[in-house]
Amino acid sequence: MDLPDIAGLTLAEGRGGLPKLDIDLPGGTAELYLQGAHLTSWIPTGHDPVLWLAEQAVFAEGRAIRGGVPLCFPWFGPGPDGTSKPAHGFARLTPWTLASASRTGDEISVVLEFTHADAEGLPGADLWPSDFRARYRVDVSDTLMMTLEVEPPTPQTQAALHTYLAVGDVRQVQVEGMDHQDVIDKLTGEAGTHHGMVTFEGETDRIFQTANEAVLHDPVLGRRILIEKSGSPQTVIWNPWADKAAGLSGMGDDEWPGFACVESANLVQLVRMCTRLSVARSDS
Image (tube, rainbow, N blue to C red; front, side):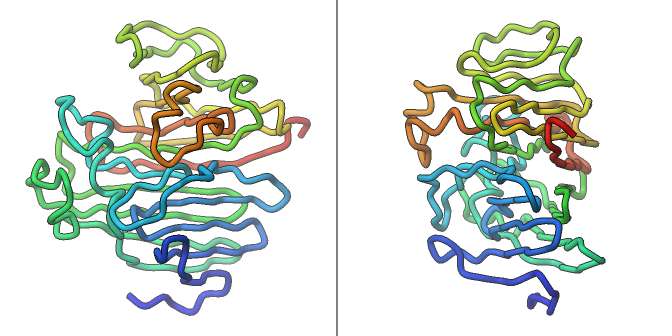
């Protein structure tokens, strides 16, 4: 569809010549690339950027963008059987189609779509024989709402909103909301129950079996980020730390302290998953 005439919403040429949607509202700004339906920026008015984007992020056709909110779909990591490639599915490697856009008051809503036909020829698409239609809705105001849904639902469908949250120093961050929740440490394979706040003291890659909301406390930037969600029975918390970051594409060796990933995930059967981000000063 053609972009409707909506105040605060423009279609522009982004980095690498890729098309993007720019959103500019009283409550904040956002940047959404059609490739991968990838949010690369959300900045609520009066706050620092909430999403982290790598300085060396690659913007090119067929490449995943490092940072922001990559969409992992139709599988997470190597998939349910542990062998699917590319990692995190193929939907983030190709443009999505703008289905609709609207403005209500000081909020803009954008809906992007991706279908089985769009996946033809992409690496890994042959592993996904089912017809499907995925819809991704982004609602921007002084909060950010992201909703991913797929029809028809099938048991093998996985998804995650791989949200890179910008922080002052990940070594000083605490994540609230995982206390007494079952967790799997992907680095060791150990399963157990977590107690207290989540802190980052080295490479971190944990899957928490919880639908709880989470709060990221950032003493360096003096703020807290609330992550509310539905349709998401798992929360993934990740940071690669120094050694692994040095081997990741699209990321500078010294950039890892600047983000903490707190990801809404559904590793069972995606139907509809929604995440809402809001930010407040620590003293408010």
